[in-house]
Image (tube, rainbow, N blue to C red; front, side, top):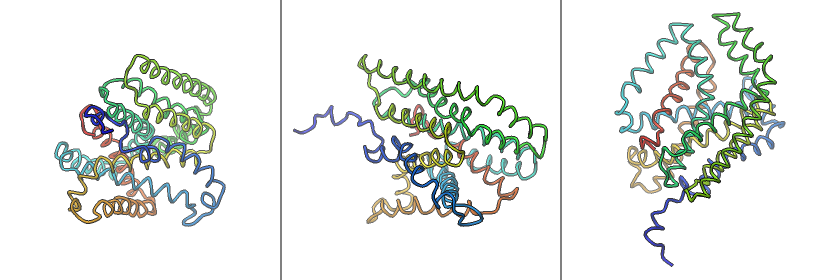
Length: 345
């Protein structure tokens, strides 16, 4: 039976399709946990390959740099977006880099800012995916924003602050201040250790209650006849369970591996879906034979090649400033480029 006009126009709810969304986005956190269980404790994570780093460390570092580089495919590679914010994409990066290269205080400030913003950004990316799924379900982009935002902050910040990695992150912040304030170097990790158990209990309790409330709210919406994005709810439940499991009960190395192994592919998948047609046109591949396949190869090969080179660069004050700049621009650009309300996605 041929589909009716109404059924043909009804949104599928997926960004691309069940397989693409399921593997790269919705169930990517669970896949990352399985990968970590298989690979950690083997030569993949323990045997040094280069400069004392294991294959796991090199892979994560390369993926980190690759996804930072990929940001510019949308900010500078999309002319519509570039000319909407030309000064943000040209003058501001130069000023930030100059400030870090000339002022130790400014370099430390940017280091602390990126450390904190990184955690917010991870939750914001999942929040953005939630809003896109909500829109794909045919709902108003403003519907349920506060609920999704709250759930993402609980899922990402709660387990991180309350988990076994709290001391590691506090020590990192303390080391950032070492060159300008030895007192803060000692005080930040000490206070984190004092309050860790209390924060852990509050984080776990808040996470469990929030998940129940989140599922219950959507169940009530469905009972009222509202359109509920099953993909969005599945993404949040999977991400929440994996986040609590990883940050709360694993070492910082394994937790970092799990949370980033699915964060990076989600980002690559989102950029591919939103920028594929634009990149095909700009690279004159739209009408070329196997143009999409060629683009996909370049889409993966170029960022990962650059990412490997950047990851293997020696860490000096100058390279640190450059890496912090890439991170800061990635967080900032994504914050105003990926907007469902403004129809930028």
